[in-house]
Figure 1: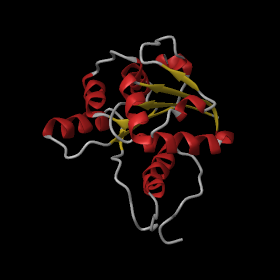
Figure 2: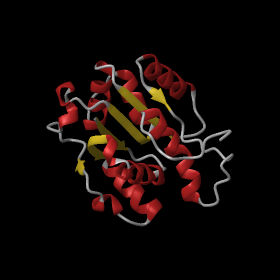
Figure 3: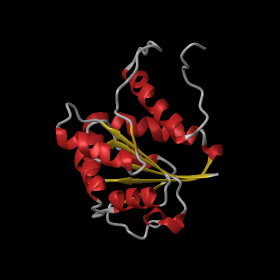
Length: 185
């Protein structure tokens, strides 16, 4: 069974985080622990974009970014997957530079050093050369960069369905079995 941490930064794209948490809760038979860590900015962006604070209602433990007693702050916590969604370029840059100044960057450092799965769902666009080099560094360290770029071959009709095309890809990358649109099937 799997242990997952979902990190939510202050980049735009709260719809992705909300959708991901809902879908992971729907496949709770595939994991034993789901933890969430949110930045202060993530909470504000969530309220602005989604006009709610629904993260408070999810049946998961939510950690602040200064809570280094969180089990995923150490490799001994055995969390095998970390998904940062959305992942701000500032967070990505700190991870790429090895700066563990908060719980998100510390947990990402732990996941990489333990050779476990780190998925960074970057949302900013366009990219500058620093962003590209930071994505390269994280990739070379074993992380997966998954830009929040929706697909349209499933013909999504609502903004939630568009966001789900990204989230379903992330869930696939994390190794979970979900029912979703598959090309050619």
